[in-house]
Image 1: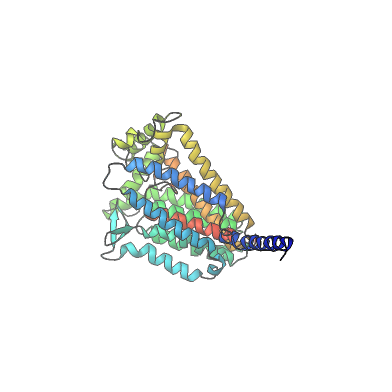
Image 2: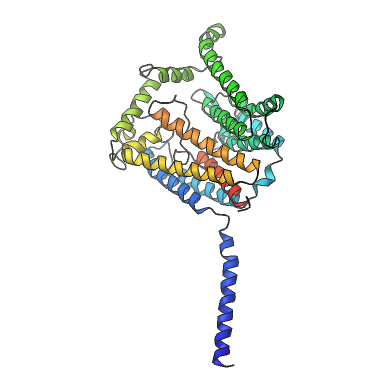
Length: 397
């Protein structure tokens, strides 16, 4: 074989290897969305830094458990990126049954546990978790399954009421615990699904008016109902106190009013650049309650100041915008609704958590996505992210 022929053979083999690499290499990563993963990874890393400082020296929390939640969640997320979400569009009844079973499970004898006046926890040996948190996943899938059946046309009042009734079942179940914070998340998910599903604006306005009127009536009638029954009937004492604190910051200076004042002090004391990592005195000295969970934003603001807070909100904005783009490019209503409900849920939780920490929203105990302490909460958010990635990778790009 001549030198020229040998060189031609080597060149041919090299080109063949390049074609094989081009055909096989990218396929390993074709299900991944680099911008989405980068933003999520930055949020999780930022959250871990803040959580580590918030729980340092506190034996009630475990940083290794938080890391375990990240690892488990990441594995599930990557699996869901490859999973074709279309396969779930016809399982409405299944999702409804799962929601009822999950949300009502804390009422089962020997399983349920009451924490802060709500029977919303389940204990299986050393493992304790909130089934209502995991139900957020199936609540979204149920809502997407409902509206996709009407092909974006919820203009008939009967169809609208049917869809609304199905979506209210999880809310009714969660209020038996009662867990108002999670219930509000369910309502917001339902609202987003109805908007995406093509509900007429006047129907939505009527529903918002009914809900607002119901909340006002509930607040006004609660003292009378409690006095007649001799126990809490409609609102728990702590729920009523949180609403009153929102209306008047000076109310309940030893309870939720105190918590809110300490939260504001923590945020304000961070200044422009913050006090520095591990130097958040409000949380480390015990002034800030539930610092790793409900008030984690206060810990972040105290340590990293205005700049660190803007960085966090910027990452959240990028996550929401990327999700909206994926929803816009989805090739079916089911996929669009899933992503919009996930993004809407994240947005609601962000606004509520940050808002309650600075006194702009009522205190509800809603955690901050990808940042607050809680391994099960972390897993749920990764699962949500996995479904967003599934819609992205199976929408005929």
